[in-house]
Length: 335
Figure 1: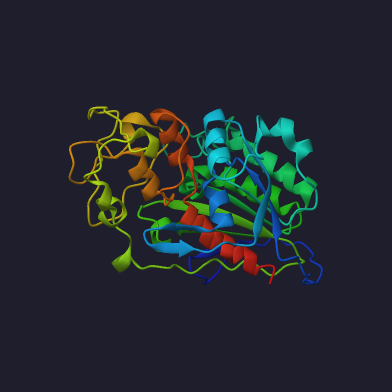
Figure 2: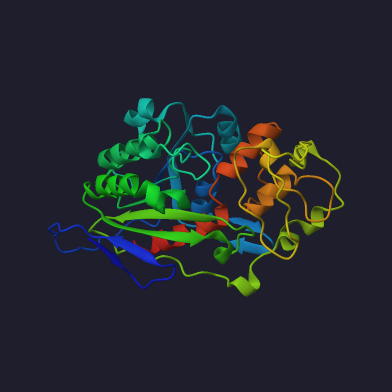
């Protein structure tokens, strides 16, 4: 049975008719261990770590320690190592499950969404990529975290994915966690982008229930495209700073969206090249640094890859600022 909550954002709590033992809150050390799956270039991991600044605002360090991370894409791994930690496992996650530490505090991951996305093939969790959520299920079974966080696209909630989503919830719930999920609009949390993502959170019976973070902004004070990238307008191309852009022309099948200076950007996509948006005032597509800003990566976060791979990494990432707000709410489960 699914009950609709009244939290902000609107939360759906997944409550099957299962017997539960009374919750007993346990004390945890000041630093909480985190396993990161499908880490990409590290957007969610940076959010959980905190200790970065963007748009003149500082996001304080959070008490999470990434003890294990994994990514299959070599270019994303290079970026992760350069900016976050050398200790990331490279390769197929199924081959590396045995290396994950046991008895960790938190497990996080944005499992691949290509088969679920509205721009995908519509195969749902039967698709080769999106079926990888099962690796998260297996990892949770082995590591027994107190909290887990799974991120995916808004398309997961659409009618044609109803069967897939129900299966995902059933599989997570079978592990003995209280499950809740919510759709978050990134712009409500200080991300200058119209980007909606689903976060599924599971909590054990030994910690407090997860309470979603309240929006930090309203539609009247969303961060706009000009707020985010206006100071880069006169900057010449600079490959070391990732301030380079696609030269693809407008075409029917390659997208021609243009930023509006006084609004958040459209969703930054990962399909690359011709789908990157045009600048609101300059005769070019936005640069990789501008796209990174729109995803709330700080300027000292350097992508160790060429244009096409950098586009893919940025588009696939969880915005660090949104992840930071989720992480703060996860930390509250342990207090």
